[in-house]
Image (tube, rainbow, N blue to C red):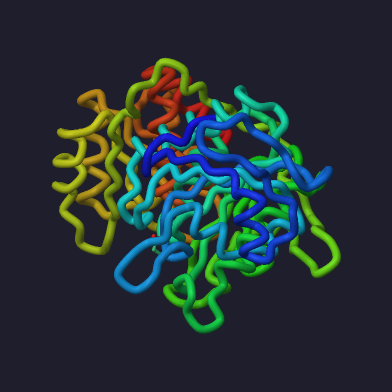
Amino acid sequence: MASRGRRGRRVALGLVGALLLGGAPGLQAQDSGSARSEVGGELPRVLILTTGGTIASTPGDMLSGEALVGAVPELGDYARLTVEEVFRIGSSSMTPDHWLRLGRRILAARAEDPGWAGIVVTHGTDTMEETSYFLDRVLPPGPPVVLTGSMRPAGSLSADGPRNLVDAVRVATSPTAVGQGVLVVLNERIHAGADVRKTHDESVETFRSSEWGALGRVHADTVRLDRTVASPDGPRAVFDLEGLSSLPGVALVPDYAGASGTAVEEAAAGARGVVVETFAGGRMSPGVRAAVQRVAAQGSPVVLASREEEGRIPTGAGEPDGESLVLVSPGLPAHKARILLMLALTRTDDPVELRRILVRD
Ligand code: ASP
């Protein structure tokens, strides 16, 4: 399997590399272009896709995927690893195009090689929750996909990246992770990729899944889930990426005391739809409410999503009339409702169908 230049470079950390790093021989020996030869017994095989972020950051630079993984020889105790660098960026630079490319890379990796026990994605923490929500909506059931990152740069005092990476590989190879959707693992905790939010600018305990809590924890001796993602509403929709060259543009506009509403109309002019981050219960300022009505009447879907961290907006907070384009995302934060509306608009413009998709999530 030939390597593909700096971006999209896939490397199986060689046995020599493993020995140099003092790692266990659980890593595949492979030169670029050579046939894959596996060394290291029966350890499960994990594909690590790297995208950058603080976990790979060093003063003034960012480690390659190969260097990031090669610096953690303990990984070879848990899996035979193949590393592929997909991007090398801070996650504040991630765009819907990056989400599409990453989602496609994971689908292709699964199709190319059904032997992966799991896939780990290293990613910046700033927008990890958006990427994990997107991937959770577009990846059908399959080998676990686990995102991880770090709050402290590589090589810094008490860097959390190496431990998070080992924990992510342990979760990705754990039978308990199968069927739980996309997962986010940091600071020993296992979160549902659709639920998790970054809540602290500095703490390694930054990720929380507010109302429901983490799914489980990575213990010294075991990976344990104390709850599952099963929902009384059944499995969520999986959106097909086939044939999608881009995602529809959807803007996000926060409401606030005294807002005039012009931002809603300006946003609608340049997008397929708008998400308004409302007050509790879907309530809006008079200016924003009037603008929402005008924009919807002109044919743009507007989704109301509460700025409150917990609870649900009543589905009647929008327009009870099924044909209205004032829609409600009852339980998602605005930045995830935006992703759901983007994906829904790849399927339909019909208000009734849009409403059904949005209310389910
Ligand atoms: N500080 C962020 C991180 O923790 C930077 C980023 O999201 O890329 O990764």
